[in-house]
Length: 94
Image (cartoon, rainbow, N blue to C red; front, top):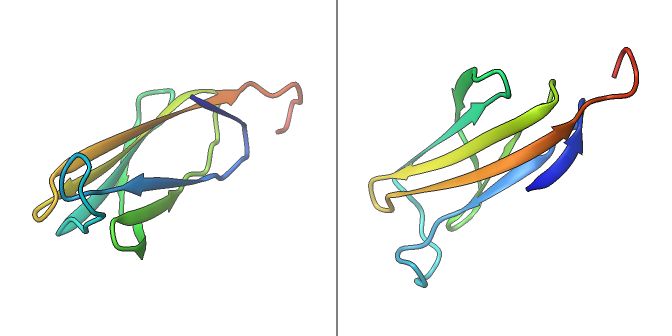
């Protein structure tokens, strides 16, 4: 699990393949679901970088574990989850 600080905005990458070890491939649709440490979920879209490679930037506003899911559907049906740990800040106003 990667570790960040409050206020960071990392760009997270999701990768899609046609099969377990197959070539990179594009799903028909991709949804990005972000769950904050408080359990609040939001849905967004990903940015296509190249075939099978997508990114999404997440603004980390609270400490705890953040969960990001790249959900592919259609031509490639796959979910990829990334968990991020965000450290509590030692400052009153991070």
